[in-house]
Length: 107
Image (cartoon, rainbow, N blue to C red; front, side, top):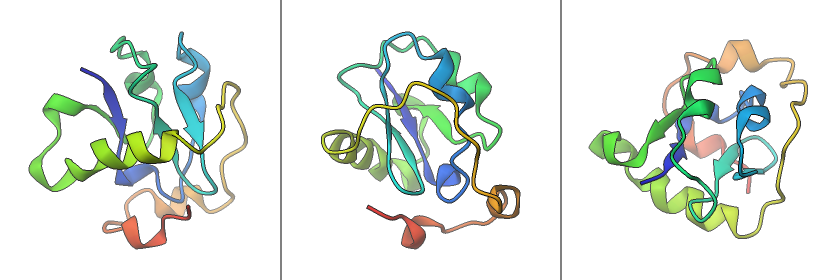
């Protein structure tokens, strides 16, 4: 089992979650974070820290979000590790409630 970053993180990229990760499992892209499933120990600490509610257990994902399991694994292979909180994008709060954001994902 592992935790997965889902669509709600796109263009929000709050990073409080990365500071509580005991295994440095987070990877950072231009406007999205992912969790490397090889490093996640299923501790759940990150999920509680996410203001966008974008982090969920892989076995609890609704069907329409299950493709984020493979997306996290894929992007984690090439994106760098992030371990310290950064300032979120200036318009992050405006993106919090936006749906269908996958088209805005920057690789």
